[in-house]
Image (tube, rainbow, N blue to C red; front, side, top):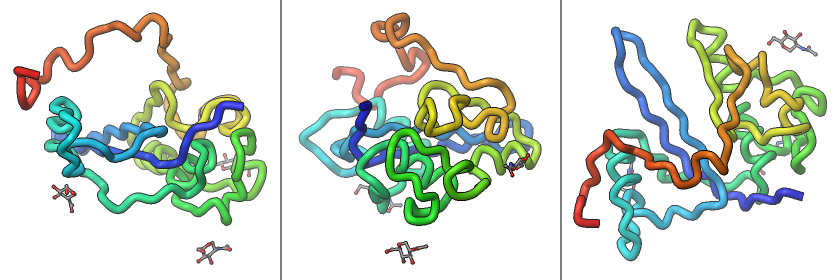
Length: 165
Ligand SMILES: *[C@@H]1O[C@H](CO)[C@@H](O)[C@H](O)[C@H]1NC(C)=O
Ligand SMILES: *[C@@H]1O[C@H](CO)[C@@H](O)[C@H](O)[C@H]1NC(C)=O
Ligand SMILES: *[C@@H]1O[C@H](CO)[C@@H](O)[C@H](O)[C@H]1NC(C)=O
């Protein structure tokens, strides 16, 4: 079983384009907030700190459940696991407990075009084997190949806070 530990580290980037808000939600788990942007000095993390400086950083976040599927179902539906009744990696909240509207679904229902890249919902049975498409997403979710991109250069247009690093 693919077990992910609970703490979610979230950054939401909001930029203004043609007068309309764009929303970029980056979701990662299996992490602790041992990062410069959380005031943790032993680790030097200039790129994530630069991203954080342009973002909303949530300082009071908690693990709803110590695995990723229930945690993601929880915050993406804005309901605790004791409401979604999702406690494992293969239960789909829409079938288990309720046809709850998700955050991306709400945006999609209000004129946004929504895309999912990589792991937003826990993939597989936990999100109806579709990453909750088409409810949450305008186009089928995209899962980039880990092997293809694992050594690729990233953030090529960002200047690190401390370029000596
Ligand atoms: C979150 O914590 C960081 C590091 O302690 C701090 O720099 C930042 O101001 C805090 N943000 C909010 C919204 O409290
Ligand atoms: C879920 O747990 C929270 C925190 O313990 C509690 O306040 C809430 O009443 C519970 N909800 C349900 C539906 O049991
Ligand atoms: C769940 O809600 C969506 C709209 O948000 C609707 O299209 C769908 O039929 C609903 N499914 C069930 C099983 O009620």
